Amino acid sequence: MNKKWIIAAFMLLSVCVNAQQKTPRQLFPGLFESVQSSDLFPDNKIFVDCTPKYPPARIMKAYNEQLGKAGFDLKEFVTDNFTVPSGVTHAFQTNVEDGIRKHIDTLWQVLQRKPDEASKLSSLAALPKPYIVPGGRFREVYYWDSYFTMLGLQESKQTKVIGNMIDNFAYLIDTYGFIPNGNRAYYLTRSQPPFFSLMVSLLAKSEGNKILLKYQPQLVKEYNYWMLGGTTLAKNQAIHRAVRMADGTLLNRYWDESDEPREESYIKDVDAAKTTKQTLPDFYHHIRAAAASGWDFSSRWFSDASTLSTIETADLAPVDLNCLLYNLELTIARSYQLKGNNKLYMAYTAKAQTRKKAILKYFWDEKTGWFQDYKWATNKQANIPTLAAVFPLAFKIATAAQAQKVADGLKANFLKPGGLVTTLNFSGQQWDAPNGWAPLQYMAIDGLENYGHSELAKDIATRWLQLNIRVFKKTGKLLEKYNVVDTSLTAGGGEYPLQDGFGWTNGVLLKLMNRYHYEEKQGE
View 1 (cartoon, rainbow, N blue to C red):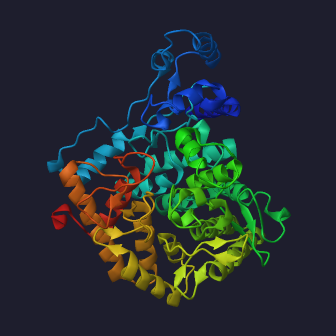
View 2 (view 1 turned 90 degrees about the vertical axis):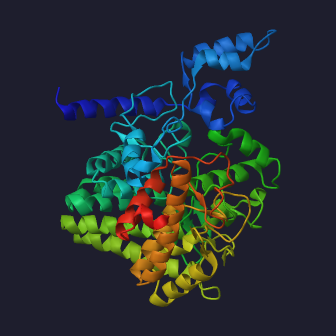
């Protein structure tokens, strides 16, 4: 059979299966809550990633029959009826003496997954082509992680792998109308920061403008997902991911369609909800919206800057999200220009210019010299400085004067021995001080280079590279995040232990090493 027909048949089968795919909580009511509320697994994500050995109806019948009987053992029941997943990278050992470049080259193979088999039993949403997972507990593809992973794949000349991953994301858009947080059934209510247009542009650098034309339908579909319902909004209202600002401009927010605890963090959400004064649906919407942002969790989303119970993510228009959508509008415009469709080229260019004007109006705080998120419902800026402020520089939206002030602020407040700290708050959340993250280092460095602040950009990159290499030589691992304040310590905070692997760390590390001609011995 022709290879294209095989792929087409796979996709048709997957659409049929995915249309019926239910989450673990939907498939195993009662059993799910019992397992997730117990100490059976150290991490709630383990059970939702288990593969049932038998049809769910059979498992539930057995569970309900055995539950009330003497001697019932929940752990034994789960072991008998489910296959527990193993860690992706836990068994991988490296020879530090071979060097960090060799380590990354090997990790591309360790972290690569084969095409999935469509299944009604697993929570995995099947993908038709190979892909790279982040590592550790993250056994599936993740949306915004993948762009930064691709930066390293590009440096490793792994263009085919990049193409496969973009094809998978295009498939997800065609199947669901958007790119989910990850390819799991329990992620199908939210997306993540929309980096798809940057992925397409990255591949176009090596494959030419035909790539923009190839993925134009999916670029437009993703845009429509983010703007859904926006035309019906009155001022200071929001629906789904669209927000109508006070002047009538449409901007966007992070959003998740569900108002229940996240299945992969069920007991943590249930426990956290006991501390809030919000209604449970509102609280869970805000929690899930923060997960959609990728910054889960950060004082950025808290009204009092310290307590998760005051989370208000969905009430904010985030500066980074709107910069990403500005780029999506420009990319779509460019694709129509290549097609010779001047009407739609002008239409999307106008959308981008309107958004740019709104970004400068709503997110720039002249008093602090910083780009801040905006509280759309109450018409005021958030007052928590974060690294999201670098996104207007990364997408060339900021003026030269604004970029200078951001550069000054980064140097004075955010620059630490190991790179840039995510916020200035030591809240205990993982997207706060003292932690630094590869994607935000990269966006800051790229943004500074756009405005000629090359010395500061190189300084940030050098500190980050030295930290990554130092930890690698000590542990043989590349980590999900790092403590950039005290470089003798590992990172902390968050809902789960520190993960190794790690897709976006590998990608950014390799990209920056090549950009600044930096080698391991310089980190000694």
